[in-house]
Length: 123
Image 1: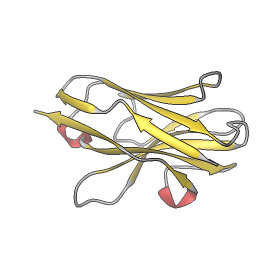
Image 2: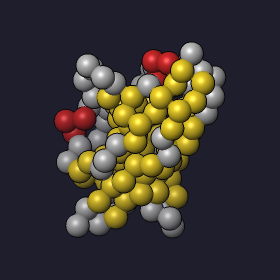
Image 3: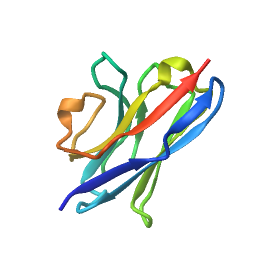
């Protein structure tokens, strides 16, 4: 059974940092792309970052580039998202998701989703 679970959310002040973790099971990272997404109240879900299958290249949306870093730990079966210099507009529920072979920043590309974790950034 494919499972993904995001954790690590919380409340921070602007300029602060958080590290989110996505624990995955039931599939191989060799042939799956894992991405991070977020959804703010009243807004559509948007892609934040993803790490590709195989080569494990990393990609970021323009809104987080230079502030967020995605990384993987194959032994622990986790994908982390380090978020620095957080801004109030980063406030959202953050989700991790898996896509077989090909992924991107479009949520429609992903088949498997975990429960989200809330991130709140105050000014």
